[in-house]
Image (cartoon, rainbow, N blue to C red; front, side):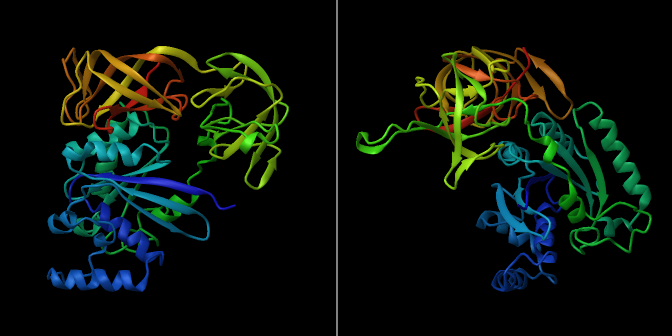
Length: 415
């Protein structure tokens, strides 16, 4: 079965993110004729002497009028080798929360830099967020190389500057690619204008980025989403349905259910297509157990000798997404995997200046788009892992109960 790569783009305003995605879709023949006709008409109406491929992703009217990206735009395309989900994220500082949303599920992030401007504060900000989110693979795409005469010197200088900054962060895999989204050089096909560059084009890199090892196949984490019982009391089937977040589950495996701590053994693993010999993340499955165990939504199935931490005290890096600042003493709902509990903000240890990586100790509050280390106390225990170990059980969202809006995203730290 063809695998799928989720990737997000990030960069400063006018670096060409939407144009790059439009070029990928256009050159890989992943757009319809009527879509192309529509953006050709719009480009002509705006007085452009070229087809503005950025219009393929800038879907909001305000985005088209201002020439910026505001919301996260998701696009889908495929090649003979792989399927792709693209998250085109905003570059403006006031939309940092949208960038966090788009990159939170990405396997790879493309950080776009304008070759004429080099590494800007916003580029460093995006690199820091990508590192905080622990996106496994990063591409530094140095765009608009056509406007610097395809200069190898410019490419080398920007690459080294990024590498110096990235050394202070936590990146496992960084690849630098010079390109021009407007002309298509090094986007889908190798450029003849930069013979000094010996690497692959962007699409080739995306097709061959190795993501299989990024999956956590060690820690079994299966949060129960729904308990399946026969209708009208017929039969004795009792199954636990949900998405396998990490690890591998097989019939016969010894398991333990949390937070109760009751042991059992897997009787059967199945999907809508029938029983499975084994299940891998991120499959949605139904698990039957040998014993009648009291399990409900929000409980978790894991291995006896490999369990998450059961705790009501949560230390996390939080990205705040609401105009009302986060303050100690405030109460919210916290959704973690399939469990939702109430929580109080105990303290804000520090806020992080993600341009300089400086810590502001005891800031008193986290403003909109602020990021800082926060301590929460929940009314019921959560089943957590550090985000560094498991992106699924190590993350949560914060919800304003009065409006039901998501106001924050958290990444659990090591204790």
